[in-house]
Length: 85
Length: 397
Image: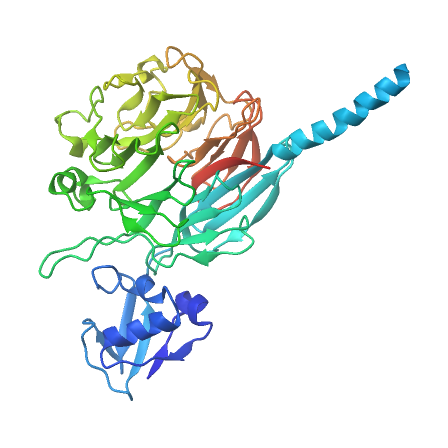
């Protein structure tokens, strides 16, 4: 599925958009990390929590649970939230 | 004959002088809230070449050279949005590669609240006999070790999950404003199994068994009025340094004064009482002389009432003792004489190994200052940098 990448993570993907596979959000993030080593830990902490200034949207709805099922046609958008100056 | 002798002398002298000069090139590593800079100088330390920014926009808490190979740099980084990581260069910053497994706490069991590393705060190269070993201290307090030069990191020792240590570490509210920190990781140059570290808050700790056990080392340290000295939670060692010329002597800049300890004694002695009363003995950095265990430098700050964390009276100064803390001398020649309200953070002051020793500090207002004569006079190397978090100096061959 299509995954949109925020500017802060483009040093990994070198693109604003990429493709990743997986039946859940967790699996998609694992696939992203396989393609771009290190990218997952910058978004998800060691307790599997989405980091404070990262938001992930699936088809426009904010995702809060990494076990959320995904379909091939879904669009995942990763956003860098406001984080001060 | 005499002329030939003279010529021979010149021929032998020149390469020796060049070799000495080459051996004493100096690198100053500056980590800031918005990136990192490397400053290069020759042996004279008069002119500096800036290399940077590296990691523009990243929050860099520490940037350290591996003294065992003289070319590997490790950088503790995060950004406003992203989680923490460590970058590694094996060519003095010409190229960087991210750690494959940055410091991270163990995953908590189901139903338990686990901790997450907010940022790696402190990096310490391991013992000379352990060439690929590094230690890292994090916020919240955690101790980590790498055995492959900083590529992968694992929790080190038992303290990260130990109930007693977790109690001493306290909560985020018990720590410094930008998060409680584990810092001042020290490896005894005589023994890789002899370790120290400090926690803000949480006190000073020592292991003689390579981290298998740690013991408190807080006797003699004062705490904020109204709290119990025996409770490590309320101890706040800002910066602890071991004297390379006498590894039985350590100095400490604490939230409650300046201290010295001479092992095997387990009691710290408050040597900051000899500082001028109007300046006090509160501050963050502590710098030890590379060859003289009686000489250290501190940078006092205003720790009164609401803790302004500025230079006292807006008049910045370094203070030095040459006699182990019996007396202190103000060293401010060249520094602003008034209305300078910056200060220096705990990792932002360092010494090189030159003779005389070169001193370096970076300010919260983004200025990098140096002294080529052990603090007698100061000059500014750089202005208008972001807030400086750490300054390290090293000799390059």
